[in-house]
Image 1 (cartoon, rainbow, N blue to C red):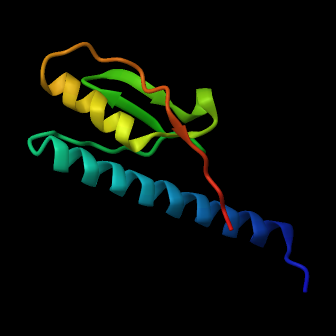
Image 2: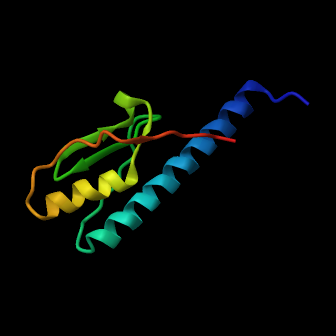
Image 3: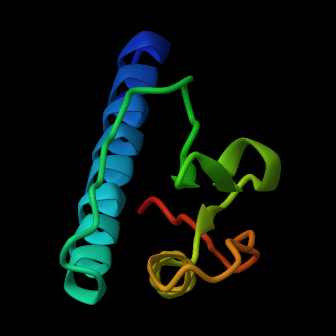
Length: 99
C-alpha cells in the first residue's frame, strides 16, 4: 500500500512535533530537578527549530547544528547560570532517530 505524499508528510511532521514536545518536556523535567526555582518558558518557533536560551542568551540552536542538544549539558549550563557563572554554549548533541 502506497502512502500519498501529503499524508506521509503530515505523519512525519506529527512524529517530529511529538519528538520535539517529548524532548522539551524531558529537558524541563531535568532542569527543574537540578534547579527547582528555574523559570522555563516555551514558544513555538520556526519549523524544525529547537533553540535553548538561558537568561536570554542563546546556548543552542538546532537550526545551526542540525541535531538536538545534549540534555545533561543544558542542565549544567542552567546550573552554572544559577550560580552566577559564565553562560557557555552547549556543544554536545544528540541524534534524532525516527523509527
